[in-house]
Image: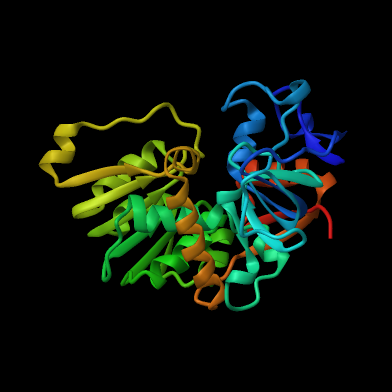
Length: 326
């Protein structure tokens, strides 16, 4: 089968076209014939080596955490999923930049179970972004109705989803921050009450109940200072590639602040059913039209390196997809 992968860590140029065998589903696994693969920043980190050196079969790693497509085969012990049906799937071990991908059955969501019309193009970008946004808000962030939410990287894939999900979950005020004026223009159409340049937010807002932060460093430190009593900073990345950040427990205690975290990989390992639940809840809202996925670009699979360059440069907005098959 055709795939895009790498056998050495580095820049986008290490991604190359491959011909590799079609995988065979083992017990509890589903083989998906991929139509679309979502592109996520974690795949940039994977390629750069932040998760270790390539250790897949033959020393090759295939990026890709989420796909849509049709079930091609199921492994032993899998029930409730039918050959040929349309699905969205999360791939905790990567593998989505390929014509076929393996997914644990628990992370495969049949599109037929959700009212409304979710096409394969949209479904290709849901299984990482939507449960991350939902888990940040409802799980790590413990969002309550009437609260104020501040979302950094407001124009990105998670930010786009989180703004809408926050409103659907009862947030009173939703504020976004972005890194450039053009991103502010894009984000302003996503339902935010205010969109600020990131360097301005610390002096412009206060009394925030929940901050979602994938940036790290000084942004994370400043986020603590804008919190209301019992406010939370929910961490889910370090896109700024800052040195490890820490804060004083004394400072948290004296100012009634909390820092929490969300990591989809850890949740997939230790609470897979909870992650599946977050995905189902987010898909339900998507199918009802209460949220939409901000897909801003669909590239051919062979252009995976160009998609990575867009994410890594910080110049992209919304969600990028790779078109793999039919």
